[in-house]
Image 1 (cartoon, one colour):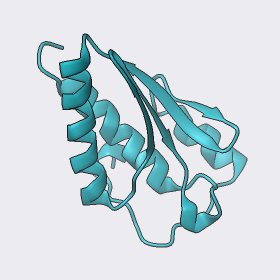
Image 2 (cartoon, rainbow, N blue to C red; image 1 turned 90 degrees about the vertical axis):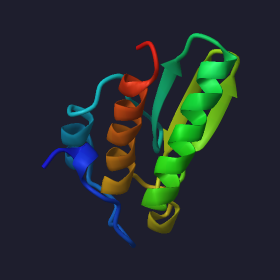
Image 3 (cartoon, rainbow, N blue to C red; image 1 turned 180 degrees about the horizontal axis):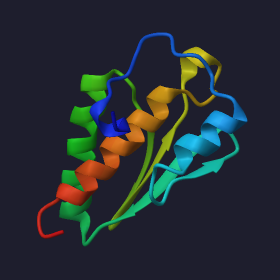
Length: 110
């Protein structure tokens, strides 16, 4: 089953460095920055950026796993870690990252 087809779980365990490297290889454009899984999404303009943020907000609410967002006129940087795992990376972070990628690929005019 692909990451984007999975659902977040309650109380996930922190991942090992080996698990993080393996899951990171399944994602495009994501990096690990300290203890954050991050990606900057480039968008055409403010309207497209806010539409993406709104779609992302809906998805993350459904998964009950919310990222940190840095929103500018034509980009959105998404940062994941899992608070319930002490700020470490878990499967939930990678699941939501894959779902964010799917939303980005589906945006109008992509």
